[in-house]
Image 1 (cartoon, helix red, strand yellow):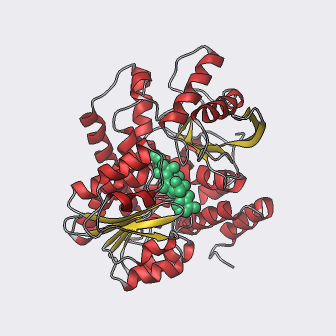
Image 2 (cartoon, rainbow, N blue to C red):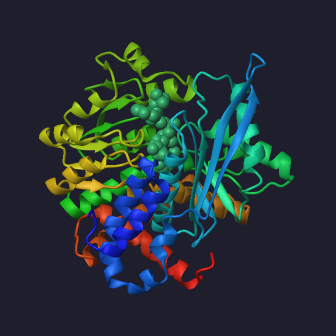
Image 3 (tube, rainbow, N blue to C red):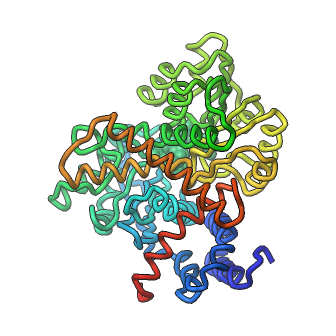
Length: 450
Ligand code: NDP
């Protein structure tokens, strides 16, 4: 039996029976249920209200055909998804992932985690996630536009500023959000804050682009300060990925005095012992949409290595996985620990395997789990929604200051919950518990027929 409580075990068994082939989803559920055992013990009313049974079953799942015409006039078909997981504390909120690896399990794990993450931000947002198995890589602008329009033609029936507010994620950046927003507006004839991550000229928020990466570093700095009386200053940092989260984590970690020496993409990683030149990375990734390998042609002294896993063999003090799920396994965790890593904080969603997390937790290093550490993106999406409702825009400094305050608050909430439930310093448990409590209370008060 994986769980101490036979009740929690029965909820997990039923989830496996219903979703047996969805391994990412079951991985996410198992981690959360493990953390919640002491909560259920202290709150029998949650068992009576069937909170766990309900929270592991999405309120609604939509799966749809997305057909579009490519540049050669050929019809292409993709599969689209939207999982509206939980609306107890606000409209569903979560990104849209466009990547060939997208399937129901991946979208459900992301949507499930989003419930707790959104709750941690203290803003009124429920949990959801969506996407498609479409690969924007190598597609022309016209193809991306036609795909996004076809995707939104169906999605528009299910979302709305007070119902479900999607955002960006892997493969969905400002360009894709723009095409989707344009199509929603055409179909519904209304200009509302139905998506976040919008361009600044049509309702986007300053600092949204930077928010997940910056937020990750604000969280990490607070964790270092409060738990180790330390900071980024003078630390060697490894960041995986080279997308939105990785770029702005690199920017803020550098600003806080760290030296980022590596970045990666799904083909390989670069190592620059002199510290990454972020202007070069932004030019390659944000402007040219090129590969990270190109960095070595432009910066002397930098090396490129094929394969992504090798990035974790680089000696560092702080590791920030910012690429994708399960990118850091037990073997990589062993190497990081052997090389003296003192802090790992997750920018991507579920980047560390359960085995890796176990090793980090038992070794006593600082470990910031994704739900807490990368919540800055969705928190700032929440701030974008507030600005849209007010029909006002706040300054960069105002949004950034709010983000900073929210990330500090998330650290302390997670830390205090870990203390209260007897696992002091275990922020995996602390974040799950703190996120869960607010949602559970809301579900309890709203009754069962939901
Ligand atoms: P982007 O699409 O901007 O970048 C993703 C990066 O990860 C790219 O460098 C990509 O490389 C790399 N990558 C993707 N798949 C793999 C893989 N299988 N192995 C190695 N590298 C891979 O996405 P984001 O930066 O927005 O998202 C990164 C992570 O952060 C995701 O887990 C996302 O869910 C999470 N996140 C994002 C938020 C946001 O605000 N954007 C908010 C909270 C979490 P390549 O170009 O080769 O595919």
